[in-house]
Image (cartoon, rainbow, N blue to C red):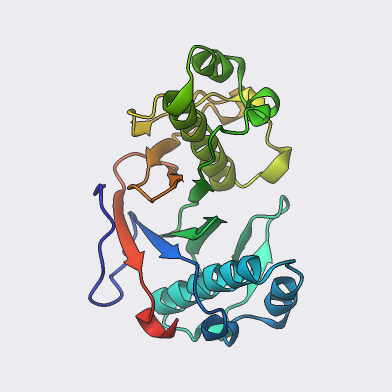
Length: 242
């Protein structure tokens, strides 16, 4: 995987065995994306308390629809979604899988054919919200954070958070998945790693990869196998009409 985000000249091919990851800055005029959203999505956008949060939601979900539409050669506004038993969204037809995360000004979308993927982005705060570690981190993860402070603590905290969230979203069990029951690396320098999973997932081969740098944020990708091609792309203003 590249350590940079590349600007595409057109929509790149997405063959089996490859994962596309797209990053988008969501601080933009929301009107450009409203037209492709469903009535339900527009209603959800209208419930946000501030214009900034509403604009970020619209930009992220419109970009998701445009990317899926390009991959499937289907108008973005015609896409229909479903949820699995734990609430993970997917398309009603076909083998294209996706995952979306947005936090602060950033959104990240992962696309793949025939395999589940998970992605997470988190806007970094200083100091980090360590109460999350007490609730959702394993004993080994909490021990790894215990001797750290300052920037090193923040880097390790967000490495764990994004990796755990990405894995949970890839597996697709939502909040029913016990976050304290599995362990990921707390080393920010270990950009590719394998988690220590609970017994019911012992036969799986999930891998975690830290995504290229985003200003003021951390992001990670979870994929269910080694050896997949992973391409990281920039989604910029004006690309395909957004």
